[in-house]
Image (cartoon, rainbow, N blue to C red; front, top):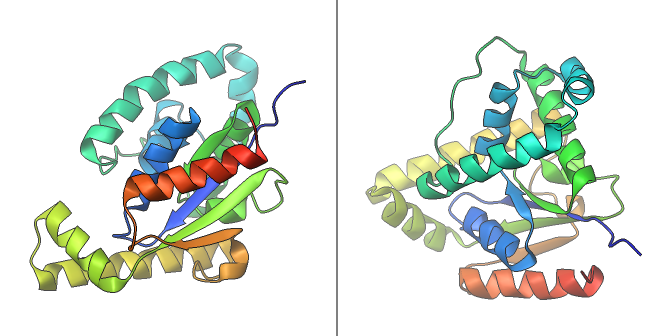
Length: 216
């Protein structure tokens, strides 16, 4: 019998190390990890809008194999740069149209194989998927502050400002497109405070329990 495909959505507080945890979780489970930089680059590469995705699927019979090659190339760059490089979308697309296109891309990818979605209001996009595990990773403020200062070489004042800006922008994005607060625990299946633990400990804990639910 074919193994059940699952999708893990990981939303996180800025400075919690959630992206690194998601990447390690993907390694442990042997599944792909999709984040903002990969989805944005995919959107640009295929020049997508919401109504063009089905045409691409019909026109490119090997779309999936092409994307796997693209992912392999791009993911290695994203891992090296911390996912912060974002190329410009090469034509004007409205925010809602782009959000809907990205959401549809992610649903298409999750239909192909088990995967991990980082950010992109994944908890909302997959809220009706019975095989979605929606996770929110939080951390205490001091550990977030220390991490941002060390990772980005900022002083305390600049790090505090960056945390405030990211927190506000992510919350505004979530409210605009998902019509809810990203801090509402009811949106998730699991909320974990990661600051007392290492990246490896959290990733191993999550991988162990996901394997129990979805033996591969």
